[in-house]
Length: 362
Image (cartoon, rainbow, N blue to C red; front, side):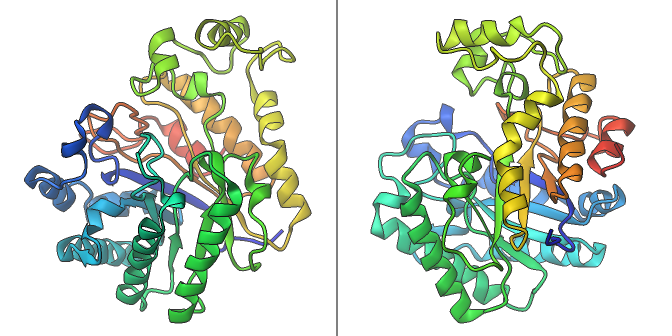
């Protein structure tokens, strides 16, 4: 299987240039402007010490998310200070010996957690702006060959062929400026393991990515941004001998067909079954690098449950020789989806066992 050299074990950074505040609670007119407080946050939230600490954990890369509205003040007009901050961050990663994935976490018209009136894939204007932003990144960071571009985080549940068309157009435009740029794309349904097969017609040098938060009842338990979890409002252990908890969640919040009918407990067997499509895809396409770019657990889940889940995920990834990047280093205190792996003040991993797990020492 083809190795993703230099990108085998990584740490995601959100809460900085993306998820700096959750738009769900803001009126529409307050969602996209950048405030003085936002800029102060961008200037100070992540430091060189954070980068050096991530390196000390035994990791080899960082996936750093940014939002289009953070870098783009208006169509074709970019915030110079934001690009200076990103340039500084690239330097910190270089000095620490870490490779970097720059990930457009939220594009205008494709916010993974809010529904917008105009969708990216339905608007030629938004698509042209999307392409222009990435071309601006290539022009500014052309001299950084170890920086990978992940074109878009978690494309919504849309026609996969529409996304293929836009992604291929984007890749062709970047290749005109830099035929060697490392490019990463994920599929639809929020980078589902089940839709990676829908990425078709790409050259072998394009890296495919996928995410996993199943079982969502566990990873997002009591999350305030997910209506089912907020409504059910119950701790969900992992591993769990009481599979009835998971079945009850489905009955109470969905009234849907029980997806756990074939299980007697929630454990690694569920993960094996759920991830089987992507592992099968990898086996059938050894020429393709396939990278798990996100997985994690909500912060207020008990630490021993978080450790168990992350250990099972990483055991499976190592077994299938799948490079990975965990989510998330640090979340802002006001984030309704806090997936932080480090303490807010000390900025150290919440337990030694969790640090060992993340580094693949499971």
